[in-house]
Length: 265
Image (cartoon, rainbow, N blue to C red; front, side):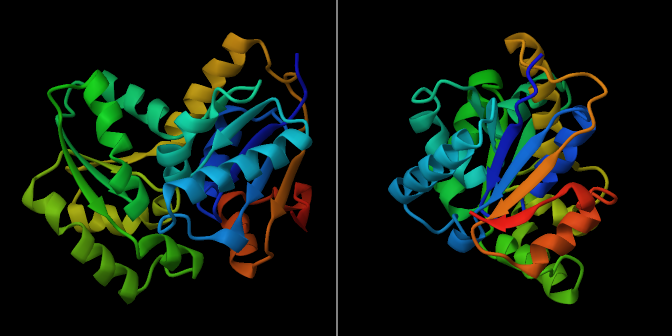
């Protein structure tokens, strides 16, 4: 048994969608979450900058004695994971591999849409990983730079959000995709609007659920599970305090807020 916490980081509130799925899959694990709100957004930054920021966040979490790190950010996963994962002595995972492993098991998925930040789309990381396991799949990429800032502003169910989503998903309608990956962890907070625009025939892939399942298997494989029936301790660190983060935390993880310690990095 290993009672050290799992470390999670993201550029802001998007990683809470991953956090919420991890605590469903692993309800007894302690977790430390770092929201790098001061340096948000990551999507418009250079690859070098993303790598440097990722190293900073990993070093911060390692100082908190975490046993494993989840990069709960599509941009950091796509541009920095391969550069950093072998430089540390603890497992580091992102959101891409667990999601693609799930897709590869689904027989009816052949035409895949990907919504992500400009940096993630530019890296082509999703398509590369998909082609490894699903060489015959067709992949349609779409950079959606306005979505993460809208989520940070709390604009997840208003007319502006509807209009922006309507414009971004046009290409997926034209290509008649059968599935759509929400390649930025902010986007699940817009899932209902996206599904409404695309219709129920398109399967929306939420990366957080797949990360939760993958993590459960990985902890068992590495023999670093926490104690069963442990009452978990959740701590949140922000590089800049913001009210929007607390509001989203309350919505996504109700009845958990008492276990959260908000403080600056």
